[in-house]
Image (cartoon, rainbow, N blue to C red; front, side, top):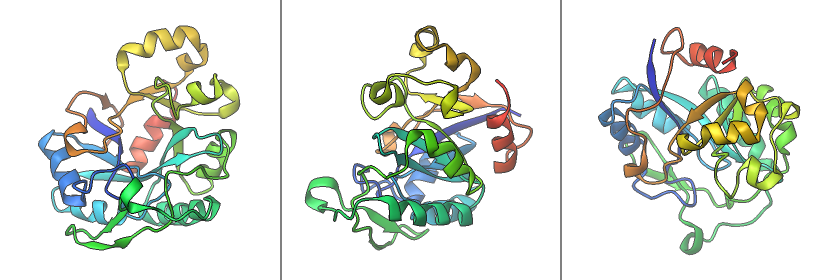
Length: 238
């Protein structure tokens, strides 16, 4: 079946995420855009996954719990998990790999934690835009230990991407997918980095503001609209 998606969305928990990126605002905007499935991928945290998933249940939208991991090389990696329990455990682990730098809300943002009704439950006080101690080479195996899958984010950008920071992508990373922001760059990137021809190429919004969510444009074709089927599709040869 054809599913329209956006697998890279931030909430107000991310330091650079707008405070209007609340659970209900996110899922209702996705529904307004007629998306079938989205993923919540805050920087180095999964604390708002529960609230977004609960808000989405009421409107019939599938939400995959996730995270945008910042590796030790400051490469951004989108991580997706099969259920909230796995995502929460991974989030707890990643928090232990971050440097103990306290957030400065007036500089970086408030890092809001919400409930399903958009009430603010609290704040994450550890700064979430720092680099974890996990390397890009270890990302696939570490995420797999929690039942998840991962892929490099916005590889066509000139900052925080695997190509801008490491200069290459090859079989040593063991990715099944890669994300581009601008799909017009795909063919040139494949010429420059032939390994990309072996990967399933995705394109998501990296939205930090409601208006930046992806319109009904990019789709995948799993067997059904479940996280399990989507994971099988993303892991399968392109």
